[in-house]
Image 1: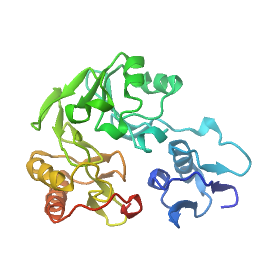
Image 2: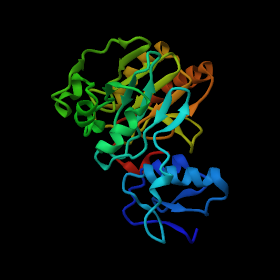
Image 3: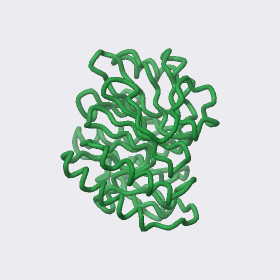
Image 4: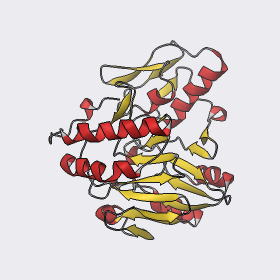
Length: 289
């Protein structure tokens, strides 16, 4: 605890706590170091938190963090990586790399922009597509797409956030955009929110729903809904039975893996709970991380 601290730039985005919940907790609406790491694995998780934090608020008292301990991109599953290096310009959202059977990759949402990071991400294979889940996460999409020579995707409802997108998703019907990868429009959090379903295994849910450590369940961030919580309920009701996945991989909130049947049950229950929600003022402090 004496060797590390969280500085006053912390925005309580929860990113660091996702990587090292046993080491970093929440106190007074901010992250706080609970104890120093013990052993190599906890040290690795702490450095994941350090290099994911969008404000670089987790710091050693001795100076800068050792860049050689940067673990990103970090493998979550076979062919699935989390990018780290979350950006303040995407509200600190998580982003992911999905490797495809043909050796190419897709990036879902984006980390902070850096040519050095971009080269690191494409080391696993040519990145053919940058898939944006909605407007809040669009800030670096064009930069990454251009660097990779990739196509940039966004839904027409949020097109003004990426007007130079190469591929525009239209309407509310699911569309297969690549073999094994389907986009499902889910207006609610924003007008143009979507999720991407890959291989009946991975659900990149953007900010439509997430795994909450506080409740131990899937949740919607109804206190941070920019478009319509009623529309989000309609979207979930239309879409829930079409989705089968093991991993929920959100932009904000935690990621989690369960058997597909259990995820389906929980998603149906979330759909019913969301139907009962009413509009409320935006309140970031009310999110149940």
